[in-house]
Image (cartoon, rainbow, N blue to C red):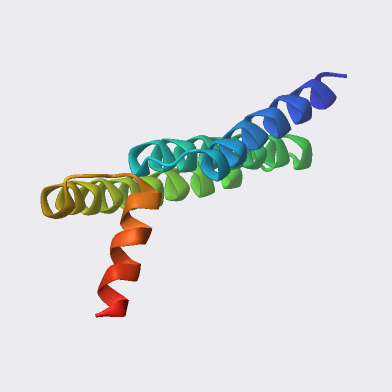
Length: 105
């Protein structure tokens, strides 16, 4: 019973993150949505380790995932800052139009 509730929670968190990635136009919000999806992955690893009885192995994978997540977020935030300084916007549709204008020249 408790595992099914845990699975439902993981699916809802992942669905919220994926929906947010698909709907939003702001790059910072995309980064936050990626964090939400990765948190669902962390919870899934924790559930798998708990079910299989190898919680220590799952925790070591979770630590590695958290480290990778921090690096990706730091690089993404740095790129967002540089992009905002260069274009003045973080809107994906605006940046897409800018790219089309550059390719047309």
